[in-house]
Image (cartoon, rainbow, N blue to C red):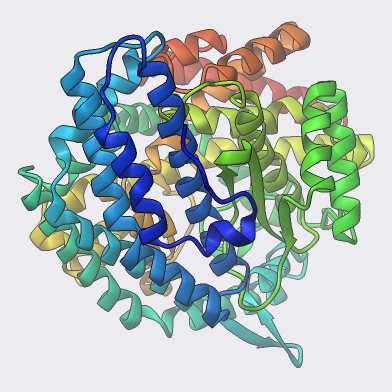
Length: 571
């Protein structure tokens, strides 16, 4: 039994490698037999949970305040002084378990994953992986520092984006142009960073004996159930089925505004976003304070399922969240896990928009996944494929949607749901753009390392999948859009998961329309499995099909358009 592990967050983030290493040495030196493997795995889990939570807490500290030099220093100390050593020590334990030929109950999938990771592991990559994480932090710093002067006040770009919803077209354009100009100021800085990303990733793949970084990533992301060619088939299905539906939505927006062409500032979101229903539609104002966001979201979850409502109340009561937007806070939103206590932490940049409501619902879905897997015995069984992890979040958006009257009137709720469903339809072509871009980058690494070639390819893909918006005169903004998609830089190839998960979530939504309680029960059961079964089995348990084909995509699109028509009658 391991002793003297950190027992508080304060002691945990101050942990040093000399204090950690003896625990790994202990596990590595123990005899591993059938009658002792459970105890050994339990101790490995306790140690691994502490390291995992240590990283999560350090990452949270750097993202809630990107200007916190002390937090930055602690993270760098972890990345330089602990992360490489811990990865090497973890690898030795994996090799020890694999060499034992033991197959503990419920460990079939973790063992499959370990074999793949063992094949991929190279000690020479450890410093390169640390370098890659540092580049990701630099990316956050560049975008975290971006502000503009707007009506006499310095504000974040996130807060500026609220103006994209203004009915005053001139004001929308002014805000959009201000955001674009500020982001274009950092084009060269992002380009320089991109060249470094591509270089370090090429070296990582070469060290691992992989022909390209894509092959490396496919193994690293443990993608056993689909291939790059499946992703291309998915993109083709989206082009055939979803792009026409998306174009109809853009056309509806154009007609509502009485325009000859739809321009980027005629959308709610500055880059690809959702249309509003009419030129005169007032901006949705779901909440005025963060406390209102919290209390109303809690009420929604209690209506979806009492247990889920209780989980969210725990997040609020124990301070496991940071929801408001401010300067020097990293952009975006996420949910991470404090693994040793099996509880989540939710990070959002809320400024009072409907997007903030949906983002909070989304990240809470991830948080519920953490709670539902609390009884999974071993840390290695917690590795859930991202394709299903996002079903947890996107599924929760849809399961919670009927209860948005906690924020809105019946008519406003209908409008919000229509915008959500139409936004999902518009997302698939954007996802296909992002994933197709990454497929191209790593299939053609020389051109992919050239930012100018990336601009050209992104523009080409944009025109293929998002033909309904006119970027005439704004080609530079359009073509550099890949710079502003953090997944491309920080977590490459982590985006098709959203598209596949959305397809699963829509199927769960369809089930809920027939039987809400049964759909929620199946959803929760699938979440509770963690990473102990295959990806298709997780989808099946949740009541969905894991597929890339035209019929599956078309069925989902037909359902979404049907619900939109129903909701329009309530406006």
